[in-house]
Image (cartoon, rainbow, N blue to C red; front, side, top):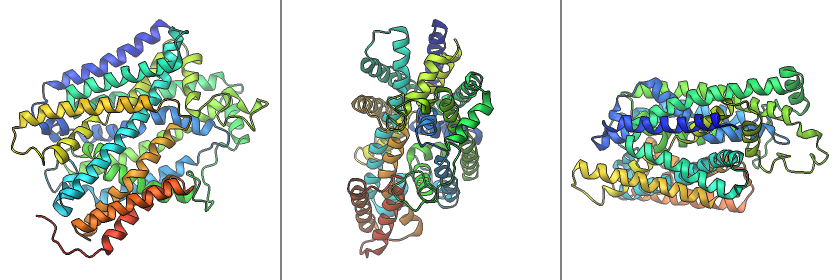
Length: 491
């Protein structure tokens, strides 16, 4: 890398912070701070959803899945499930979200099941999102630590990763705390443009660097069975198989995009349910095309590095010659991209990382945990608390990211398994509310049962993570529907 690359990286981070300060003057109320005045166009929301769903995990980790020994395109089975889940969200959930003037979706649970269930769901969201986005932040540090070492070769990799986590987390925290949700959405539109340009540039450079060009890469991919899409094996221990992807992916997407404040808050920033539905469905098509593209970059990386020619390939690390699949694409970016483009690619990774959830965590903490305890204060007071909660959420994510350093598991597996683990019971209780089954006691017991069963499955079996949301949500729904409810739900 060169000084030009470093200038590009710094310029991108400065642009992100500038957008935050540009949006600051409109952050006069908590509603604008969290919902951007509910005036954003549907296409901006759709782009924000794409940027949020992409993240550094997609940009770095998905190519590593296809690159690794035995890796292929079976991840797309999960994406097909995502599309089914989006349709279900448009039918079951989005219309209900626009019937009331909501700040968070967990307010619906209070009206149906009471404060206890609302607080439990909100707390689970905060924990899940903090851990999942800490993984995203940590993955970005993998790339940035390589940048540090490119300019300061004697820097210890662990130290470089720690400094990177703090720097990137600090930028994320600054523009979000200052500019609110409006800054988040508009910076995400910038992110989409940056990482798409970066990914296309990487693909072109890779094709030009591979012996035989595109045809040679496709031939190498076919020889290694990289283009396999469907795996119909009835094996619940495999995360990327047809039924796990179709069913598990649908339930996971219903939870992450339908009952997760991080995503639903974006829908609430537009003017109507119809526009929110349009934004979600269009984003699904873009995401499918995007995942195909990133998996194909993994095949190009496989043809470029030719790991199958290593003498130890069959028995060594799955991502040989690398320690982890997440190191493959960053290595190419840092060491093989031309001057200027390397900086653009690193900026693209940063773009995918700085789509923060701290605003959504703060909204949930304020509306569902703080305000029920501290009532009757002015909106100015709640706005000040909102900013403090945003800062606290950011510091927590930085801390968790630092504690997770050293893991070798693919980041996309880690992040999605965390989401699958916790989101199932939340989805289950929303399904109870939609079906108008059970009451406060039944919902609380159902969620507790769902969590207990998922914990048992996670630590007591080898069942793959796409099934966690299915198991957790259906357990919650079944237990909650079967328990007789003697008390009435609060008005």
